Length: 261
Image (cartoon, rainbow, N blue to C red; front, side, top):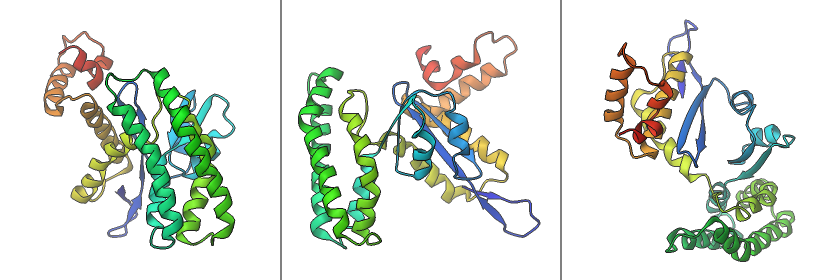
C-alpha cells in the first residue's frame, strides 16, 4: 500500500504493507498495517500466540518461529506449486512432474471435501496418512535428488530451492484433520485490497493506512460469515452512537453480531 510522505517533495510516497491474519475455526480475518516488511509486525501481533501457523515461504516467518517451541509452523502448498508453474517453460520435464505430483495431493483434498457424509477429523487424518503422506515423501525425495542437478538461479532451480526447506513441515497438515493444505482461504480475502489499490491509489498517512486495514478486517470477516456489510454497518453505527446501548462492543463484531440476528 502506497502512503503519502510528508517530506515536502511532490508525489513522494512510502511503500507500506498489510499483513494478513486468519483464524479459520472462528472465521476471523485481521489486517495489520506496517511501514515495513520485517518481523516487527508479526512479532508484535503473535507474541503471546501458541498453536499452529501456516504461511508462505517468506524467510521472516522462519526466523520468527523456528525457535518458538509453542508454535508449530508449516507452509502453503499453493505457493510451492506456483513456483513450479512458473518454471514449466524453463524445464518442462521436471516442472510438469512436480505440478502433476502436487496435483495428486489436491485430488485427495477434493475427495475429502466432496465426501458425503462429511468425513470426521479422524477419517481425514487416516485418508491423508494413507494417501497423501507417501506422495509428500516421494516429492521431498525427488527434490533432494534433482536440486544438485539444476542451476540454482534458473526458474526450476528457484522452484526447488524455494520448496525444499519447506517440505518436511508440510507433513503437518497430513497429520491433522483440521488443517488445510494451503492458505487460499486468506488469499481470497486479500483480493479486494488489490482492487482497492487500483481505485484509491494511496493512503494519506500511516494512520489512515491502519484505519483502512481495520475496515478491511471487518468487511472481510463479514464476508466469511455471510453478513451483508451494509446491514451490519447500519446497525452497529446506530448502537455505538446510542447512549442507552448497554451491550458489549465486542458483540458488535460481525461474527458475534450474526448470532443475535
